[in-house]
Length: 98
Image (cartoon, rainbow, N blue to C red; front, side):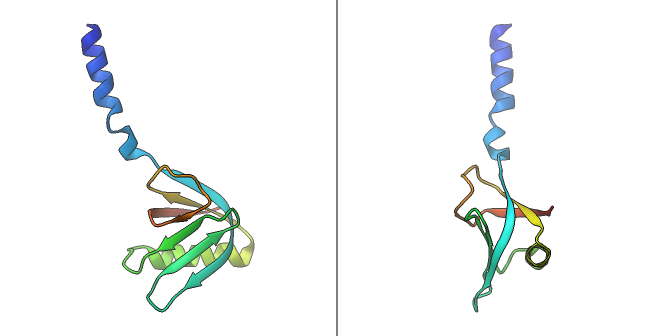
């Protein structure tokens, strides 16, 4: 019975890292766009969300970041990895306008 419970626990816990994500919250301090179509959204803690030209929701995310910048609201940026906030991240997957 113990072996069955251990095996079941391992099957349930094994995909957990694949579901991990990091959320970084703070005000937007700058937005940079270059001639290659890349957009960087910079937060006050140094977190940089790099929006790639081919991203499906890139224009939506950019408009949310511009709204946060002009209205002094914060955003919560979600990244697919489990790295710490405060660095340039290319694994950007979503945003909340707080």
